[in-house]
Length: 423
Image: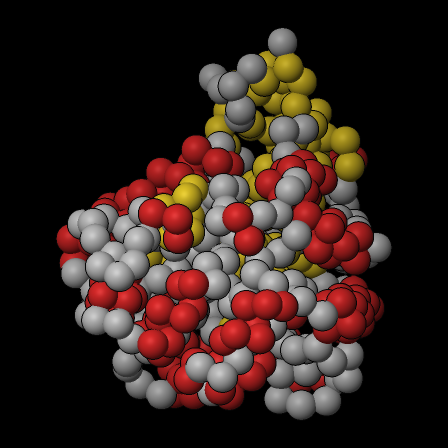
């Protein structure tokens, strides 16, 4: 089924690059690297002073999100596509950079200049409160073979970046972690490790996948399916095929779309303040709102892409303006009755007419739309012996219980916060 998205007014806030050590860790690194080729490109001039988020950056975003309630009475949620590791510069020794495998630090471990105390705890707080939802954005976001080749052949920009614990250089910017030019065996192993690290860090399997830099070839599709990664983001921006504009049009017309077992999220609507609060421009507030209304009018959820670069930067005013622009966007969406979903909820509503999203360890947000095909039956966490509907639009029409380790119940169309009762 395909829900009435015109009535539901669903918005998904997808955000890439969380956990990524790029572009620079500090002002010194930017001073050293600002003249290198990657930093002189148009994208380098935008991203050059962006950095790994701090705990306080995540909490500040949460404060913005928690100011609002959507049309269902629940706060917006940011789907944070997260990188699960970073190359370890201390083990990459010049001049030969020997070693068969790329040495990695697993998130939240970071190289010394990228240390971010309390970052994981800030994310965990957001997960518990329901405004932060991690999904998978790859293992390390680096075309490792291309990068190591550049280092070993003595590419000046790659060596200079490495000296600053950075990985941004021409070779990295020209490719992607899962690009076809990277060795297939390495891509397969890295993807499997990324999924395993995600499960270990966040206590669940990833429900959605955004390949870094939108580079991947058909081999990745099957590998991802085998690992349970069967909801894809950013397909309309995939590199190496039709123009992005044509892919967006095609993706808009085909939703809901499956490719084998893979569910394809709708084309994204860009919202990139880039240090400005102003609403104008092709990726500003007004254009984003127009895109949202067009998506609803065409009968699909509105998927907004807003990169971490808007909210993690060496310059505090840049971040303040990014958060202010996000506040303005969410306020405008709430005024129009928007509700805020994650990818897995969109897919659940399309496939069966209901969805369930954990809200930390305290319960789950259950949505049911008219015409739901199946009764709600969703795995409950270990130790949960009962469940109770405690909040939501339609709360008086829902009842929940635990049977054989699963949440079941009677739910009329509406949204329900179901609280766990543990033994």
